[in-house]
Amino acid sequence: MPRILLLHTGGTLGMAGGYPSALRPAAFFKTLKARVPELFALADIELELFSNIDSCEMQPELWSRMAAHLHRRLPRFDGAVVTHGTDTLSYTASALSFMLQGLPHPVVLTGSQRPLGEIRTDARLNLIDAVTAALRGPREVCICFDSHLYRGNRTMKVKVAEYDAFESPNFPVLGTLGVDATFAPGLKARGRFRLREKLEHRVFLLKVFPGLDPTLPLQLLPHLKGLVVEAYGAGNVPVDASLGRSLRPLFAEAQRRDIPVVVVSQAYRNGVDLTLYESGAEALGRGVIPGGDMTASAALVKLMHTLAYTRGREQVARAMFRPLAGELTPPPRAG
Image (cartoon, rainbow, N blue to C red; front, side, top):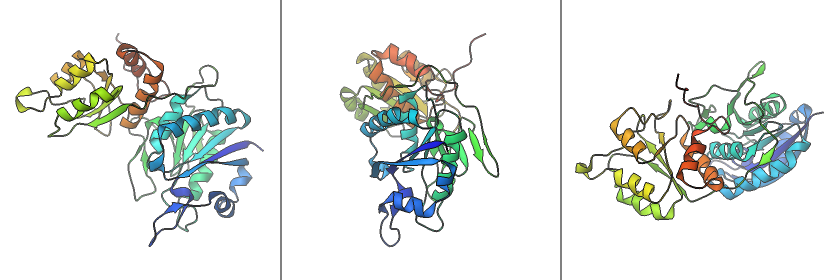
């Protein structure tokens, strides 16, 4: 039988409790064998406990450890499934997609909206679909949820109380698991399987909103190595100095300190184009890096990763422009 590594990290899928008590991490492996025995008919599954935490406790240090563990163990298997809480699932999937390069087999992350031990749970089908995708899907880091396979670094959690909790707003699904399971080819393999697990944690995600006092992020700059700005629409930010809310001083100070600033959009679909409006053009003039159609979570994690392996704002800009793991749609070439 094909071999699958099932790495459990925690999350709702492996929790117990519920009304009137709160959900809490619980013994996962015993419940898995009792509730989903057919899972072991699909493959020879080796269960490993990486952690047993709520995903709100998932941190960059754990991403690095997880990537190193998968790099060491994955060549012995035909694929890997990582069970994970949904709240930070897109962040972890993005991190693993950048850290594990030249994947020899699929790495599929999944979770659930309800614990595996409950009667009306989505965990059982998500697990079966994830193992199926790990055996037959593309060789990249994916999220499998509600009978769909997504590129991990393209996803967003969009719902709390429905089973179709994830979407990929700017990239088509990589697989559909209905009566039949069909998969797209995915990314082309490039180079040998290698680990690049370093991250620079001193980054910040700033969401622009009406009334934002620019002196607050200015005070943060001395403590940062990088900044992601969630701007309006195509990348617009306030620049009218007469109203006292201009972000020009923030961009100027970041440029003076050689701190990379990446701009992404708050809009659900499409991406930024800093050439469309005056404020975007001003930001470009201050060396701001357009994030294209990356999600905010992917841009933040990619900036962490890029800062760990590059030096200087220009090198960071070139790396952020270049798709690393399919997280970004490259701009059309001139001519």
